[in-house]
Each structure stands twice: as C-alpha cells, then as structure tokens.
Image 1: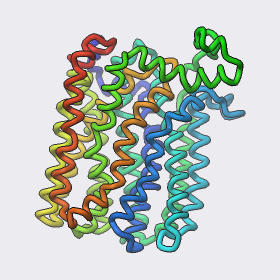
Image 2 (image 1 turned 30 degrees about the vertical axis):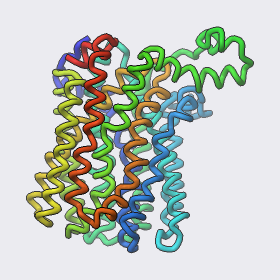
Image 3 (image 1 turned 180 degrees about the horizontal axis):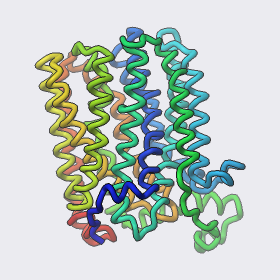
Image 4 (image 1 turned 180 degrees about the vertical axis):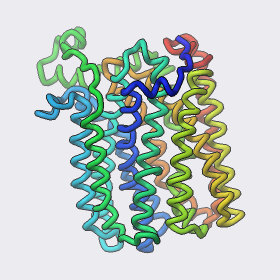
Length: 451
C-alpha cells in the first residue's frame, strides 16, 4: 500500500512515536563513548591518525549482533521481563552494563595501555550493539502491520533524530563542552560525568509505553518437519538461529535478499569513512573543541532532527526506493563541501554551510534506509532480521571505515582527495538499487517503495 503523508503535529500525539524518538537517543549515545570522546582523548594523548582510525575496529561488533539477536527475541530476563516486557528489559540490562564499562574505561589511559582501553571500548560497543537489536525490535513492535505504511516512516525519522540527538546534539555536545576549553575536565572525568546522562536514559526507557507482546511461539510447529525431528536443545537452536534467516531468504527470494544485503553493505560506506575522520579533520583544520561542539554537535545535531522529519515527509510522499536513489546521490555529493573546507581552511561560514547540507542529505538517506529495513523485517522474527540487515550495513560502516585514518596517511594528509574518494564510494550501491528496482515491483512493498 502506498504510504500516505500524515499531519506531523497529529502524529506527535501518538505516544509511541515520541517513544521511538526518546529511545533512539539511547541508541546513538554509546557511539559518543567509543567514538567522539575516545577519538579526542587519543588525539590529546598524541596518538596517530592511523591509531585513531584502527581503534574504531571495535565498532565491527555492530556487524555481528545478528549472531546473538535471536536471544533478544527469545530469552526473557528474569524479573525485568515481568516489569518491562521483552525488549525494554533487554535495553535496561544493556544500559546498566554500559555504566559499568564507562566507569572502567575512565580508569585507563590510552597512552600507557591502548590495548586495555581498546578492550573496554569493545565492551561498550558490544553492549551497545546488543541494545540496538532490542531498540529496533521494540520500535517495529510498537506498530501493527496495518499501521506500517503510515507510521513507520515517521517512527524511522524520529528514531534517526533520536540517534543524532544522543550522538551529537545532546551526548556529543555535552561531552565536548565538558572536555573542551569551557569546562576543562579531563577525558576520564568526562566518562564518569556522562554516567548521569545514562541514568536519565534508563528512566526514559522505564517509562516508555509497552509493546503488544507476541504470544509464545511453539517451536515444533514453526520448525516444520525439520524442527519436529530435533530434540529440545537442537530444536531451540534451529528455531532461534536458523528459521529467522531462512524465513527472510524464502520470503524475499535469493536474488532480492542478496541484493538487499549488498545494497545495505555499500550504501553508507563513504559517509562512514568521512564520519570516522571528521573530528580529526576539524581539529587539524584549526577549530577548537568548543567550536566543534557549537557547530557540529549543537547546530548540526539540531539541523539533523529537523531534516529527519522532512525526510520522513518526502519518504511517505514519494516512496523509499526513489528517495534512496536521490538521497544517496545527494549524501555522497555533499562530501565535496568537505573537500572545499580542506582547501579554504578554518572558515566558520563554510563549516556551517557544509554541516547544514551534509546533515540534510544524511538524515534523508538514513530515514529511507531505516524504513527500507523495517518493511523487509518479519513481524515474527523482528529483532533477528532487523539485526541481520543493520549488521550488514554496519560492517561496511565500521570495519572498512576503520582504515580511513590509514587512507588519509597514505594520501600524505591530502584531505581534499580523501573526501572526493568518499563521494565516489556510493556508486556501487546506487547501481545495485537500480538493479533491484524491477524485483521490488513484484514484492509486497513494491508499489509503496518504488512509486
């Protein structure tokens, strides 16, 4: 069914959409902990661009959370499940673990023991990746299948806006101001102070609306003959680790399923390469931490929230496939403004212009991508299949992006050439999208996605 635009002010009255935004903050915030704060801490300690880039390999774990995603769909955490349901209980459990790792990393020093800091950062990213499975499933489960055409684009936009709020607008700005010239806290102290922010996020999750809990599944029936022939442990493994992925490929077909995963792998690779090195670039260009907090985090984060909502309106009006094609081209092209910054030097007006254009195109493309994944995720195996698709996307964004610092070093610090390269990286994804468009016409979301 073709999604129809809805009045945004009326949508805000739906508490579930507000929950998608607020809990989205919890998804973006941990990236500050193993991303922005750690990057600036390492740079302050004199570590190289290559080392800063390579430490981001800890985010590779996001690409593999589909391995344990079935546990989030199936395993009930004692006590927490009765109080908060399946997915909110997992979110709260993960947030408690994040607090533990925040405290541990604050007692380490990357200059003296980079390996230990890397292990704590890996702990943060691992718990965050697990939390993302529960958050994505929670958001999709808030709405019935009949509501998806109308509600999911808005929920996706608000989730993306929440992610940006946690990563840049609130968490990132707060972290940079605390560790910048204004307050002057040390980076270990910043980690400890941010624990208070995490406690506030836990309160938000505890007060969020519940989902419609699915009835308990009967493994023997859903497993078919294969499941019925297995003993209880093997049957459980079959149901949790095999059936969700098999259902995705059977429902979509092998060619379309492979196309979807290849597209998600390559769609935001250039953006990820740029994003990993952006803080290093700003500092080398001559901007202070306070200026970065003001322009990139406060102004840029606020703009992203607004642009995410605009992207949702465009998405519901024109369809996600056409929107992703246009959004991908625009997102990649905006990287050329960073090349202009590299040539012009620390010009505040150009910095602001670049951020506005980049945040608009990135927010638009992100809303389309989340909506795209939401349409293809099964209602029965929501967490597992959503994790599969986002993990494939994150593998390109995290593992390959870890080499971004080495690429800049290999180019002799030629930032302009690096940003041109990131612009060209979207081409394979757009070609895959065009190849898939014909198959999508015949799929259950075909008309709504490609119109």
